[in-house]
Length: 604
Image (cartoon, rainbow, N blue to C red; front, top):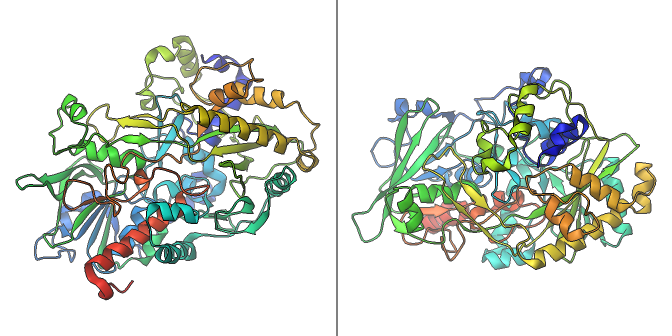
């Protein structure tokens, strides 16, 4: 299965693709932090409310007391991510808020902060990494964020709103939605400076009929457009963590390296009632944070589509049989927790170029009426100093593969990889990746616990292309991308001869960027190509769906004082890229909660 490891050139190409698109499962040390970028400083004067989790006990008598008791809060937000940061900032305008984030801050991490290090940030699987790699049971590499700011710290930065139909299906107030997006945009969103490759993609999409050209816009409209970005003109990333600048520093406390282990319930009444949470600090010591007894106080889960259903089950809410298997005390049976998981499948075509390649992430997007989005990324490879490999991608030492059966890792390939110890990787491919994302996949999967350790990834299945309609739409998408890469405009830019499409498809299959079985010689079958080369674009969602796990206002069904506000409540991924809507939702729900509690006195 891992034949490609025996070829040095193929290995380089594999690692290059893997670092760019997915999560290279190796430990590494980046020289990005050894040069000028090492001088990144965290300004404590702007974010006075951020501290390490171990300081919690020493400041229990702080001003955060809301009812005369030590260490009680009006809101406890589990996860300072893409939704959690804007949510906490908004709630802190009127109430005391504690944010518990399992990762560190993004501000001093050069692999997070700079566009040029995008691929290295994903490749870093050390314990302090901003990304935590996992592999779905489908055999597809993936990642989840582990840093203040969440997925906005490790994604490709593209910013595009959801369409009006999504807002209507979500049951949201359009007026408040249209007020909440600009609240985010004023602080962290920018207009990109198009690279030549992105211009070539724009022109090629228009040439093959993805029209009209909508120019630069945040809106989700059919045709070809230029979207926003959270990278500024210097290539510096601005994340959801910077939305904390809106917060009231007197009422907000953010603890980093604070890993919540479970939500605590009082089960003595007719309905379970949340009283607080138990978390561990960076030294492994446990703490308990308590909710205020004031009416309206809540714990809010914002841990993402992997973390939120995982936390509900670890806390005793979920399928009865699964909780019993792991001896987790049952608080509330709900068979729907962890169900309805979906990930938008992505497939890519490698496009060679004789022209110099600039680094660029997503800037141009083609939004088709058949529910397919076409984007591109260029110029990311490895420098000789960028990666230090301690063990191989198939090693049983790598926790990434805890969900992959050992028999799928050929021992001889694994050992050969481990023996090499170090690789000095150079860019093995001069060109780009044209990618297509399938919107609205019908195929659904599920999430289940492997153990009771919150630090470990749960088992996740997305069932890519299980529904035949998903597969058919992928075929249509690959045909469209094939037209794009062989268009006159594109060939004028790449300065390459018009290649046989099957040759490009073959190169993409041989890159072997997932663990799925391959049919290397069957690139004439578009269906097989879709199955062989499917990867993630990190837009997975579900697990705590509205109407099954939470109500429309995101309150967990059957218990008191608990909500889930993040992408786990979505049954589809909004827009071409979801981060804009997830950040907007944090602001939106924060305003809704304040208005529900305070009415006109909320001031928002």
